[in-house]
Image (cartoon, rainbow over all chains, first blue to last red; front, side, top):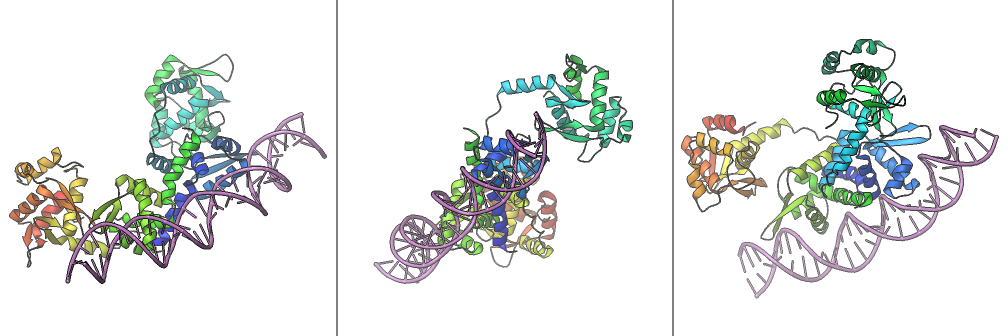
Length: 229
Length: 229
DNA sequence: GGAACGTTTCGGTGCGCGCCGAAGCATCGA
DNA sequence: TCGATGCTTCGGCGCGCACCGAAACGTTCC
């Protein structure tokens, strides 16, 4: 393969991003959430047929992955490498402005006013918890805990082994429809939820699915997982 | 600036790389050397007029910088960020094959059979030395030594302070025509060259500009700078 | 079973851009 | 001063691709 063939391969990779509509879609997806094709069309300011064609190109390139749920097609960035690529290309244009502090305040409130999904945390709190567990490598890409994760659970007094023996998947990522990101479900999600209630870190709210993070709970979750940074 | 304007900016950045000829030129420049416009045209397999137009686009985008020397126009990648961008886009295609060991052997010989440029090291050895000083942060982007660099020179018994007081620029990067990369010139380049001769690490060769790295010199330069890795 | 909704396919249209050769400009050496 | 060399500019040509609406397909709900 000579220089020009290598150049053609590089050019093809860059040309996926070199269209305004596809680039706009990638920037929208940079928020880490999954969006439907119709939503992406509206946000990018193009027809749904145009969006469908562009999404086909983005999925083929490997930058974007799709998940089907009935008639809905959810799209998200494939992985951290894809995100890094889009971000580093963005930085060669202009750096995006820092987020306003009001936004951080709203996010903090969303974490505190958590929602449960059956027997595990959902909403902003559930998404943040999954992100924190991954960032601290307490769970890996597979279905189980890491060694560090097992020690961490033992320190919480969590009997993770019986939850792991259950027929139910232990570490399961579930797309959170309101946040458009994954939260932690499965046996581990349920066990952690139950344990946090026992420890008094979470308390049930006025309606069954509403839970709130208590004062001690906030301090502990901040110290152990950095949830409220 | 709305989502679509941000998308347009990202698309423009990517479209610079999305042409096969420009992408080929960027891959050629990834070797860290400076090439003339005519040479780049030949290697990319395009007419010189085509190359001129593409180089204009690459320089405008900030990915490539130019240096003029008489009728010659030398082009090189702008900085490490530009190289990282091109490399990460390449990695989303296929990884380049590792260099053959024969090449490493030839490079080693080039380092040993060094050449001097007036009063400082040139050729492969001079380029390698500059790279090693930068990698170990003994010199910074500015015109002087770092604190670590001053200690390093003191350990060599180098009186760098009198060389720094000279009217001559202390750390000067000079484009090495044979290697197409910068080597170290200026007061520091001369002082190091003189000191290496004093220490017996370099010895003059049969013609005045040829110098060779001695046995002890090779061991010391390997230990202190990793020149022969 | 039919209506509503989300998505995909396809043909038509228009535009941007890459290619080149010829001519011109700047630099260098004899 | 003139010829050679490196590079730039420009007009012409051709092609690839993004846009859209209409129609069709698949899924969900009543």
